[in-house]
Amino acid sequence: MHAAGFGTMLRRFRGDRGLSQERLAGDAEVSARHVSFLENGRASPSREMVLVLASALDLPLRDRNQLLHAAGFAPVYPNASLDHASFEPIRRALDHLLRAHEPFGAVVMNRDYDVLRLNTGATKLLGWAFEGLSPPPEVLGNLVRATLDPRGFGPRLVNHTEIAADFVLRIRQEHALELDDARRARFEALLELARDLPLDLDVAPSLPFLPVHLRKDGVDLRLFTTLTSLGTPLDVTAQELRIESYFPADEQSEQILRAL
Image (cartoon, rainbow, N blue to C red; front, side):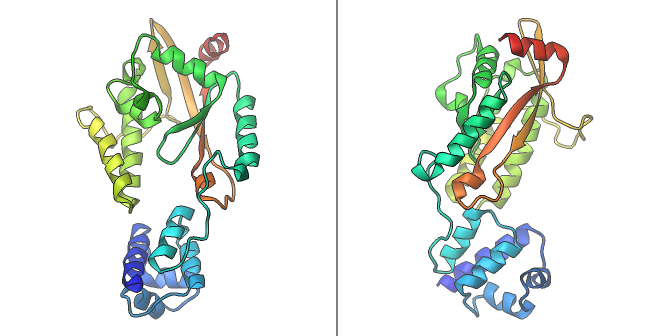
């Protein structure tokens, strides 16, 4: 039973990455015949072989654990809460990054774009953007939902359709690679929010970054963002953390942010 489940999952991961059995075998330094036998359930992998193939596929740690489980082995990589004692060095590093980015905004998110932490600059920026709106907590707490949900800050985004299109493309890609049914359902619910938006998903960007153009009461605020992840993590949660930092795209926007 484990061999069949493992083979199906291995074939799915390989296909998602556009690799042939021969290419995967070469990267993993095993025979293509052995890869074929593993995929069709004629052979069962050792724990070491699962990890070798997962490395060759460059799988995220969460998916490596899933592949191990499908083969009948216990997960190797822990999946601790951000509040766990083992995360104290990471929490301090995150706090340092958030403080260092002041007075500009920065938020820490998980893989589902849920906001976990934010600095004072982000709190002020979101307060400015949401002033006069009444989004519910579930909209405020998720960056994608805050953008796509009509109760979010879409009315403040001059380039709302461009930002929404970028998120839709990201969510579609992640949905295509996701094996967990519950998470696929969450992605589908987010995509449903954008169903009636006039999105053009084929327009090539004219700038080297996607600007965030906010407008409120005749005041324009132009930003761009960067995403940072932790290097060489050995924990699922740590690997999936993202720090999104907001920078002013012009001098006027910088002055506005510094005055908030």
